[in-house]
Image (tube, rainbow, N blue to C red; front, side):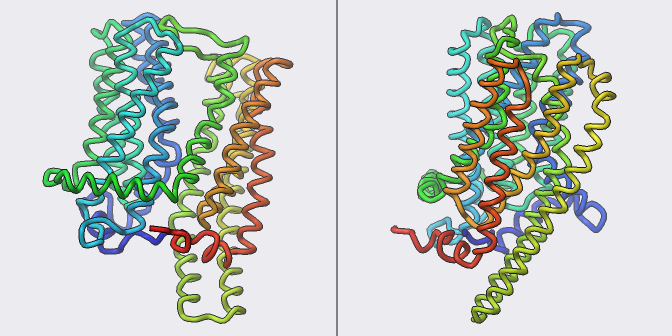
Length: 476
């Protein structure tokens, strides 16, 4: 496994801002940061679209509002596919702690890594958005341009968020997220009366997200960056990618797997095409997006466990071994580490089970409030059950990342994507649109990932210092 962020650099980044600190706000900052990183796209795509859609309906037609909503949803679907692999590579380069000419990482090296990763993410995301626009034959050139810029800026924002999380700068992450989203909403509401087209509202979103990216980059000393620093950062990214590519590719598969059943529904018999040419399935999308909200608190709790108690337990484990512990002592420390891991996972899953049960019991109320039909109500209940199983899959996948089992992580994420695609397609052709394919994929892959994670924990000594130790296999 790679080492933690150097303490001096971590302290420097942490003290760049004085707000959101202290005995009261510190735990709130940690919880909000975990919530944003774990579920930011869902919060953004649902809450802001509902607010703007309800406001703009007085001045714009239903078709224009639908095109605006779909453009934002598509942008936040495509952007993480590009941003997550690049963000993970940059974050791993930072955690390795090697940067400038003297071999030590400083604040400008972090800024250079973030800038290079964001630039590549923006260019790649814009190319991907244009490819999707050409494939769907979108008819509105203004909307196509706004959609491409929104996708690029969203990818840059999410890449920056991943880097900030690696720097333990949750306060900056929260400020950037809140400011950018507030800017997007305010601009959209102010221009809704005179926008006259969905493309103008999409431009408002892009402006707000660009503001968020600016807040992420602001404290990292980019003004004094030289071209040599950017070249070193690009080289460091390339070097890190040589060992991190399974993790980065697996993360991309993980995101694609969550969307796979939606893609099948869009292409299925209940799929529709908007005025601009964006395909969607209102019957499936509304119910599944609502079901995904049940995972938000559980994901935040899991993220907090893997960022606070677990790293401390891992540090104690490594400290005991570095003091020359005997085999029996090492096995005892490994057992204690495994106990901490399973305790955190069990608590997170119990919380998720309680939340999912509550959502299932409240499903009739939620369906009525959201105006869902009977078929959507059934999709909602199946989706909530699938989200619970998917939470177990994510927890087991996090264990694989912890022990640096990159190929195993890549394999289970690809398996989830493949099973979700195949099962959802088969069910769509036989029984119609259903969330059962997603639930089946989560059950199968969650079970497989849990078994692999359990075996990994039992053999944690070997996986920590042999199989998962990149330094042993570095060739240059």
